[in-house]
Amino acid sequence: MIARLVNIDALPSDFPTHRHTADFWECLGRTVATYGFLEEVLGKAIFCFKATRRYKPDEVDTVFEEWVLMLEKALTDSLGHLIDQFGKAVRDHPEATVADLDMLLDALKEAAQLRNVLCHGSWSAPDGNGASQPLFVDRNLERFGRGIDCAFLKQTQKHVAEVSCAVINSVTQMGWQFPGSNGGIV
Image 1: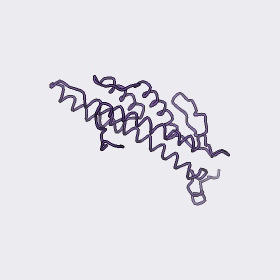
Image 2: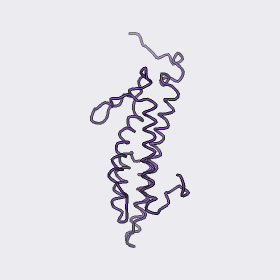
Image 3: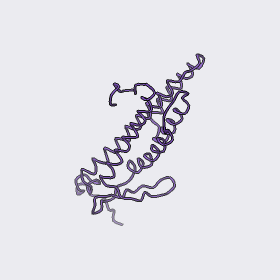
Image 4: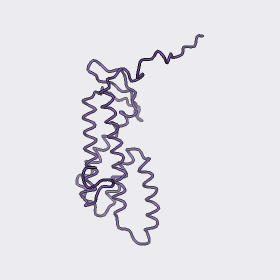
């Protein structure tokens, strides 16, 4: 039996991403980075809604200890869990006035499903129109079934930026400054 080894020196430049344009990779990278921004925003929003509740004096020490764990989880949790925690934090806040919370949570969950495809998919060669069919199978063993091109990625990036802003607005509409902002654009 003859061993067949990959001749690494003979591989194309930028292997295995060489079959796509730099524009495609930029669009994908910007979209993935926007998802990272969304995760950061959700973590900060969760903290805002939990930290601004009124607590009884005998609860303060316990709540303060829980905040440390909550902050750690906000840094490490998956997007889906952050969305669930955000919804719970808003619903549990006695003074929360987030309009259309269920619609926002649905938009966040929809965005989260696509995030996994974009971040974890293996990208096939693009077709004649520049669309690539990522190989991605979810936990239900369902394969993602459409090609993705720059136009789709730009639309997705815009949508994720918009839902990120809606999460920020859920905090600022309460009259609070969003953490890390100067009161203007985050």
